[in-house]
Image (cartoon, rainbow, N blue to C red):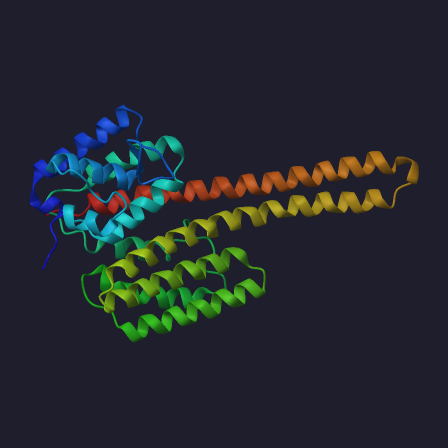
Length: 299
C-alpha cells in the first residue's frame, strides 16, 4: 500500500507546523533529549505537536516508527531527520524541524526519497571524499548499484546487497590497515547503505532506517577525516621542528622545546578544527539535499 504524506490531509501538516513554530518561538527546540521539561529535539517536538493536535494525554516522544504511523512519512526519513538535527550547527538545527515539515507535500509518496539520499551519499565525492580511493572504489560502487532499484520503487536483490555489504566491510578493513581514514569512512557509509538495502528486502523497516542513519554519520566522518589528513602535514612539520630543537645546544633547549611543543599543539588544534568544520559542512549539505529530494516529490 502506497504511503501518503500527512495522510493527504493539509490540516495535519498545518497543525504540526503550528506546534513546531510555537516550540521555536518559546526556545523549546534543543539537542540531546527527545522530550523533557517541555523541551525537545526535532523528533520530540514533532511528536508533541501531533499529541497536541490530537488532544492526546501522552505520546512516546522518541518513537520514529510512530512518526511514520502518524504522518505517512517513512521511518527512514525520520531517522535521518533526527541524525541531522543533532549534528547541524545550532542555528540551522533550530530551524530544521519546521523546514523538514514544511518541505513535505500532503499526499506525496516519499518511500523512494531515503534510497535516493543514500545513493547520493555514496556516489558524490564532494560529500563523501573517500569513495574513489583505489582501496574502496569498487566496493562502494557495488553498494551503490544495489540501491538503484530501490530509488525507482523496485525491490533489490537481497543476496547482492549482502554481498556488497561484505565487500565494503573488507574494503573498510583494508583502508583501516593502510591508515586511509577517509576511504575507510566512505566504505563504512557504503556498507551501511547496502545493509539498509538488504534489510529492506527482509522487510525490516527499523533496521533499514537505522543503517541509513549510520551511513550519514560515516559520510560526515569521511569529510572530516579528509580535511584532517590535509592538516596533519602541519603537525608533522611542527614535530620536525621539535626534533630539530632536541639536537640544538643544551643552553637553548628549554626555549626551543617550548616553541616546538607550542607549534605541534597549534597544528593539532588546527587539524581538529578543520575536521569539525568539514563534518559540519557535510551535515549542512546533507540536510539541504534531503530537503531538495523531499520538495521534488509531488503527490
